[in-house]
Image (tube, rainbow over the protein chains, first blue to last red):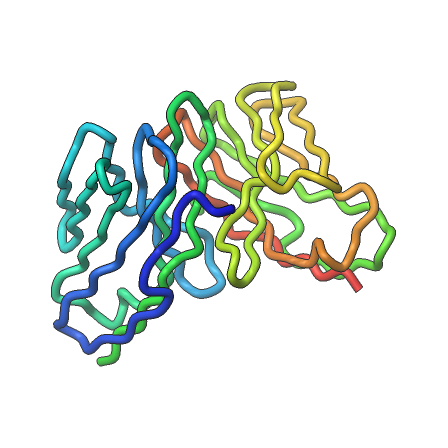
Length: 111
Length: 111
């Protein structure tokens, strides 16, 4: 079964609005990462948050991590049409060297 | 996609035939990965390598084998292709347990 599950599966918003995506996972992690995938392309790394961090920012991205709830959220502020993509969370489990991906959130931003 | 190439980019083959996909990197990264991406499943790890001749299985390794004889090349072989192996295959590289960099993908159709 998947380690990470994103919620919602799909999200549609207008340009300028904020988009929030959530990720839940099952077992203890070393770090959690978010990736973006434009249609037909490979994944692109967005941000990494370690298990001892609670919040991280990168440009218009804000990621939070709650290890007690085994969950993370990705907030994209002031969204743009170019943010339209699928977003995946991925976790590196403790004592492993593998990255396990969730099923993704499809974000559509309308101009 | 810089520094990672996959070949072929598209392939159509028949059930029962062997297929080899190639991933080539110019970054000298230690880790290389093969994933498959299917609707509703996100990315699933097939096999990965943590050094030349050092490989390990992922979560969906049945029916696949890999080889890494040089740092820069990681080959994925489908010994006898089946229709269930129709998918998009992504190669990724990383220095360690953090950011992974993805190739452009190979679309494989098994008839």
